[in-house]
Picture 1 (spheres, rainbow, N blue to C red):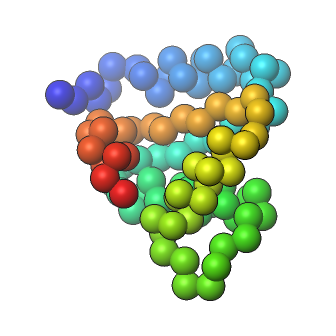
Picture 2 (tube, rainbow, N blue to C red):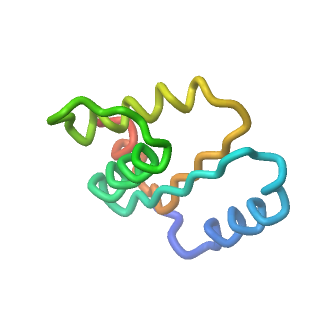
Length: 91
């Protein structure tokens, strides 16, 4: 089921604007396709200066970011344009 164009992103933007002081960090990842989702994880990895083993795959980096986030406090992780949850669960 697809829900494109009904204002979900605008609602999230409003939520973030109103509640930004509640979170230490807000991460916004676009999931138009699996490549953009994994690129988002790579950007978080770089911004957080996480150590990645040489030759680490995009999936391994995403898993590293998820493990790192589990240890952090007070963050919000937004996955925009995720119309197909199997894209998120399949890596």
